[in-house]
Image 1 (cartoon, rainbow, N blue to C red):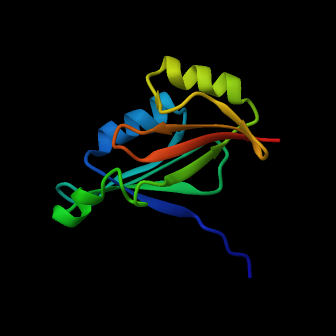
Image 2: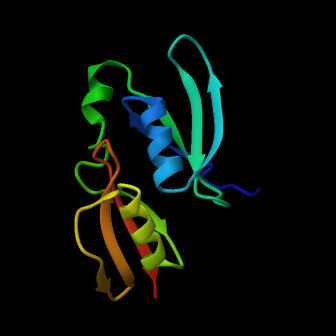
Image 3: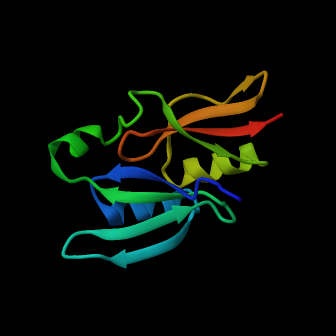
Length: 128
């Protein structure tokens, strides 16, 4: 049996704002955008060629709204691996991504933390 994680959920306040950031700023592909009702949609985005996608889920109720941007208690939630850190970092900054630190070298590679528009923390990382 072959198994893998096909998607992970990210709660967002607005589908279109989330799609705009992930597709237009980070260069992800919009894999699916299916209307499921008056407000609900099935929206999946992923880096080009990735096996695992992010399901963008519209927050419903106070508990989910309160979790936006803090779904992992203030820790980095996602790790976007690249083989061109400098190029991707420059492109993301030029398109409005907000990096919270300057790139730094660690024993495992070069990394910098950035935030999506909702407060979720990401590592852009190029392993050694």
